[in-house]
Length: 470
Image (tube, rainbow, N blue to C red; front, side, top):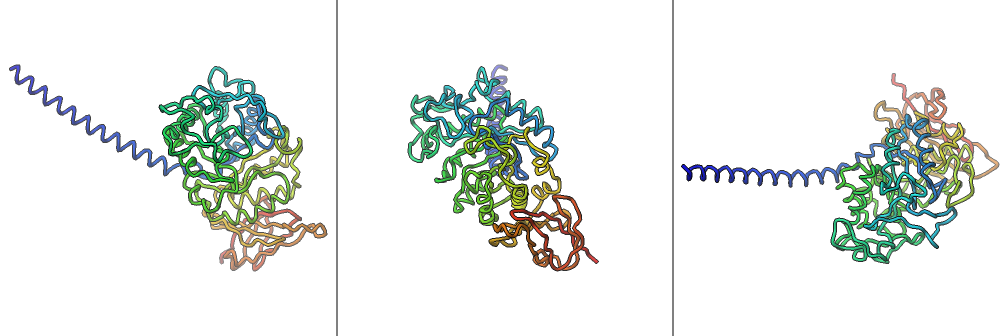
């Protein structure tokens, strides 16, 4: 009897072992599959070009928690219903004594944890006290139905290397994974991380584990693309984001991202810069016509060439460039900016201090017909780009309507306005059509053959075209 019970016990144990083996195999396969799905699916996290506010144009490296909350409150009240959702704290939130018009690299007070990770400066972000990081601020932004983002610099802090701090999740230390080669030319907070070194991926993993715990939804990673394209660090960042399981939209900066790396950046990031820092002057704005034409074929769902921030509204408050001012762009130039970014489907990151918006600036950000073009149009492409004029076209996949954007880019003061003629047949319109001005909402009338709207100097028009079928 005792032997029988012992034999039965052995069979039960063997059955349990086999079950556990099958379960372990299932978990391994599931984990690998989940990781693969995460890697493939991150583009779905940005179904349309991301729209938000970024602190850089108005506050440079000096923004405070109170200012971030004021912009959050404005976005929640006036912009959220139009699809704006990201609130992004830009550069050097970890320095307690930074300054406008250039960075304080003389005696910066860094805030860093025991694992070599920068944390918010508590004198600027009081809710970060007691090691809470950005979680309380993220919670506040989330409570408004919005999403939270930060800017970071590529690499590992120089301070972490100098103190040879440990890397969380690894036996390696900071001094084991860095190189001085490729250090950022314009800000010297960081060293390059060498992807092949033991502990390199673990460091990025530890960063994004912390950011995920904070509740991060968006990360802008600087010094990744220009003048050197750091493919290895881009791939490490992608892996680190994916393993958190949190939908953190990844923006690569600055620009111009090398076009010969376009396929790579499209594979790993949600958005990437096509230019360097863009400010409120016509020369830079006009250059975007050629830039966007160059990058147009590389846009894909969830992957967007980024024309940089919108220097609109009140900017330069404590910024790197310029004194406090309303944007130096004329109203016509602001229409050009918004129309070009819209028809190209660039991300929209507003740079001005939102609470200082005037009614005109707010109207640029909340036009539902224009934002529909940004978010739903397809087959966006340049029709022509000439010295004094340009036109882009796109389609509404739901209705079959065509979208047309026209621009008067002439710099001749003697001709303040001129007609920009478009052959409607080039849009596939062979008969009569009804044209609507999307900025004003007004019907322009019925047209056939040619449409020649008169556009102010440095101005733009954006239209919906519906063909009449007999």
